[in-house]
Structures are given as C-alpha cells and as structure tokens.
Length: 537
Image 1 (cartoon, rainbow, N blue to C red):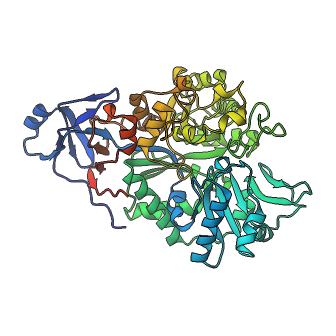
Image 2: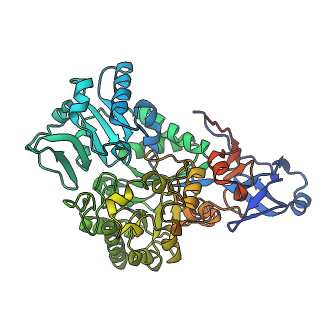
Image 3: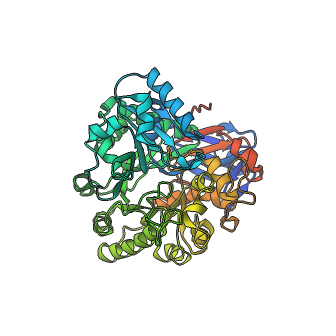
C-alpha cells in the first residue's frame, strides 16, 4: 500500500453540509482545515471572510460528521477473512459442510481454517461434530472458529495433531466437549481452542502486515478513521510498528495488548503515548468469561437451557485484578471482556479494588468490553465507578432469537441494558467486535435505535425500553469512543484543534428511515486532513 500523503499545508474550507455538533446537526456552518487539524468552526460567511484564500470544498448538502471510531474490533481477524472458509449466516449444517467441501477442493493441502458458523441458526441448534468434518476432509486437519470467536469446531485429524483424546483434561478457562463415552466431540470452548490453534503454521511478517492493512482499509471504507484493536500479540505489535514507521497505516490505531506477562513487562515500562499519532499502545485486554452463544459466558445462576453449567472463568479473576493493577499503575488502560452477569459483577468489583491499590491514569477510565448481561444493580455501578461500557449494538440484533432460551424469562431484562447503563451515568462506547459481526456503523446505529434486525424482527424491538436515540448512537460512535480513549478534545469531535478526521454522508442522517440508514454509505472521508479514496462493494 502506498504511503499516505502529508496533510495539506494550505487552508481548506468545507461547507455546504449540515454539521454534527454532538447534540444534533446545524446548518450554515463551515470547517477550516490545515496541516491535519481543524483550525476553525463557525458560520460559513464569517469563516469565508477570515480565510479568503482557503481552498473551497463544496459539499452538496448531506451531513458532515467526525470520522467514526470503531470501539472494539480485531483488525487482523478482519483482514484474514479472505483466506478462510466463510461460514457466516450459513443456515444449516449440510450447507456448512457443502461450503467447507468446496473450499477444500479449491484450496488443497495444509490446514483448513474457517470462521463464522453459529449452531443457533440451525434447525437442530446443536453443536456439530468432528465426525461431520471427517466424512468430507479425511485426514486433513481443520479448525473452524464459531462466530463469537469463543468456540472451535475441529475434526479428528486436528484433535490428533493437538494430542487431544479422552484422557486430555480441560485446560484452565476452557472445556473440551465430550460424548457419553468421554471422547471429544470436536467442539472446544474458550481456552481449549488454543490447544489446536497453536498447531497452526505461523503467518509470515508479510502476511501479518497484509492482514492488518486489509482490515484497516476495510474499516476506513466503512467510515472509520480510528479503531481500538482489542488484543494483539507480540507479532502483531511488531507489524503495527513496522507499518507506522513507514507511514502506511490508513487510520489511527489504539492497540490493547493480549494478557501476556512477558509482553506486559516489555511494553508497560514505557510511558503511554497520550497523543493522536497513527499507532499507540493504549492498554491491556483481559478475558474474564466466554460468550453466551457457546454457553461460556459466566452467569450468576445456571443456564436456563443447560442447568449443568453456569459458564466459565476464562481467566482467574484474582489474576485479572492483579494484572489490571499493574496496567493502571503504569498509566495504561485495562479493558476487561465480561459478557455474563457474574462476569460483569466481578469485573466491577476487581476494577474498583485495582484502582484503590494502583490509582487511575488521569482522564483514562477503565473499560468493560461487551457488558452484555448485567443486573440492574450492577448497571448503575458503571456510572458510579466511572467505568466505560464498551458495547456492540449489532450483537443484540444478531443474538435476540436465542438469548431468551439461554437466560430464561426472569433475568431476560438483564440483556443488552444500554438505556439502563446510560441512565446510571455510564460512558457508552460503540463497536462491532468485527470480524464477529459486521463493522458497518450505520447498521450499528440502526440496531441501537430499533433493537431489530434488518427484517424487522422482533416486532417492536428486543426489550424496546432499552433503545437509544439516533443522536445518542452517533455520539457513542464518536465522542463516546473518544472519551473512552481519553482523547475527548482531539478525536471524535468537530471543534478547533481537533484532528481533521471527518466523514461526509450525502444524506440528512438524523432524518433517514431505518431502512435508508442501513443502506447508507460514506460519501467522502478525510483522515488527518487528507481526503482518501473510498471503495464500496
């Protein structure tokens, strides 16, 4: 990918569109840019007189917004999708197997890797088996990651490569599902997935670079000018630094390290970059529990549709508390994955304890990622403790059909409690968890305000009292994420001295129907004051 050009040294004045204010939109306003920064915001006629030699950029109506910020994604995972079997939204097991068979035929040799299957979409709603894969792949090892990233479907050859048999114990923070005789079925949950993944051939540095650039470019095409990349290892960190040094990163990256003790020791001894460069290490990502779809999310009471389990602690909470204290003391931001109500309660408890011990970096609040199933009492604690609720609206509309079965009627009200969180003073930051879900922010905004999928289900919305307004949803994709990153004055906003990361859409975004909103595409995008090309399918 060619290096991005430097921001223009000349003045530019953007006018003609309604301007996002953070509370709504205002007509008749203009924005002056120079050197990658916003120099002035105000009435168009006034700024035209002050900057008479500024290059005019006439926008034919529509809305000028801050560039969206993707608050929770896995960039390399987005970039890797093109080289894997795509099982997203496959409606049944036979069609999944047909797609795997066709991919294997077209890409012979080596490990077969895929992603996106969801047994909850299938008529049987039961997990697939290794034997299903064995029938079409024979001795070729395969690992197929579930849509949420917290389970893997593997064949017998992959189990053998990893040395997994009836005598293999469940690893800490994971489960090997077994049949009635104790033999592994081919489904691995949470940390058990790593037993197979570590057998995969490591990508080359060039392949990692390509995955990151592909993922970042895809996000840019969706209207994002920055991303919080949640959980990177040492290899990915080195790739980001290579790309940053060559000025090749297409959008800003705020990276969260994997919970790797060696990597934490290496990185957290350096002062955190508090600026807005194109790459910075922002914090550390921790996992408390798994996902609801694979019954790994840790609940306060057993699953309604499987009373034998209450989910998993992927990492010992005491370890997370100790390591979160280390991150806080070093001036970095802990971001804790917590989906179940037990995990969210524990995350709140341990963050409060860690802050008492280590303090908190100024203007950098700790984060809880997903905050998906939260009791009303705990939802109120987010605001009281000043903790970010980093949520993904698209998960609600993707998962609404089977969430009631997991939780049962008495605690269903705990699911995706966005309005309750906001009412309690929580900072909401929006993302998608891509590639788990589609990162398109317009789909996320529509999901937040309707709590319905594109087909209009469920009628009236899933727990409709928790819906947000369109203004609130846009704010969570812009200034909400900026506050969560500790940069409320420099990104996610259109104001003097902020970076010139801007998005124009050729529509009055606050007045579109939900259908039109879902179909909306970015019209023009500026990153660091440079207009960049956009590609749409």
